[in-house]
Length: 465
Image 1 (cartoon, helix red, strand yellow):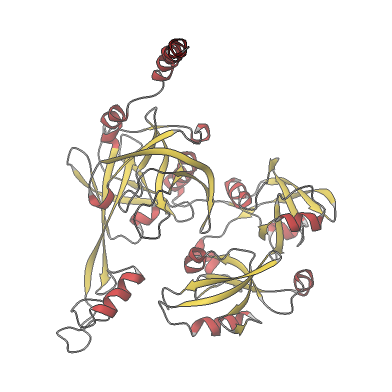
Image 2: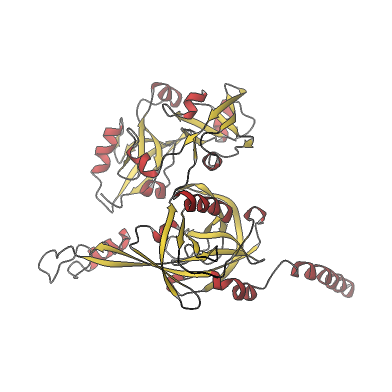
């Protein structure tokens, strides 16, 4: 019996391994072949003394335990009061990979953000000063260029063909250790993160640490399927959850950055929220799906198309919207100015609408729009209209039109209603502004949020004035 079983196993391996070997390469072979196209990126930015310690936790550490140490945040020069705010170089490290033999390189936008100098180092030790061609914060993709020819380039793969459980590998410069290789598997696909609504992230368990950002994620065919972008961590270091930008999303952004210096996205002009099981039941939907419209912005493409608050968007341009997080991505990928069919659920019936998309405002434009300014804590807020108050059965609160920075990191979402800051009831945007101004930098405020049919407190740590 045992002999027959072993024979069967041997037969399976004899058949399957040669078949797999055609497509799958050894990690060592992958590194030897593709590694020369991976680069180390170092950046220099001139900052005022004390700002080189960018992390609030680190600044608080030095303030508490080394209050008189020269050059430290909140410290004193020679113990005689604050010193001159002279500029000093702050240095950063990251990774990237060459996508054209004439010197175009992909990396993360946050790697080169605000840099006064970007230096690229190849595996053969050659160094080049790079020019930043363009960067897109919404996808965290940047294109930089060095003056060189006949460079090694990576092969690009198809991330849509990745399977959960498939082996992947990363090459990068964690903590400045150049051309370090780590490997793992794909843990999940299409992940949405609170502060990144335009990227369906690839989640992996590949060890990624500071300095890996911008480096390539390879499949076992030696093809780049993603750009390693960020980690989920309570300690600041790798804890088993890493996220990569799918290479097709990155290349679409890169093409626009190379041709025009910016990325244009479609814009609908709605504030949406998730459809919970209770909300699906109350609207008469067969199951929780779609994106619930909680607000239609004035003079937006959505308003012109006839979209209304309480509509549930089920399809966009023929694509099903299963979760509310799907909508920003598929709208953003559509070309501004195109006419798009929408399928919405309204008052128990399916309706068809057509919308001509606008162009999504840039982050700076969004922050400066009247009534949509990004307030302290990273929130853009709008007043609740009479219809919204009736629908939510509320007589106070303000609506979250956008959540960035501190608010996004805390988990506050677009479509939430802010009811209170600490013990202060929020009856208007002005009241929120005054309440949040009273929270010292580095401290947290307890934000009472209405989300769906329930309420919860979210601690919002204020990182700056």
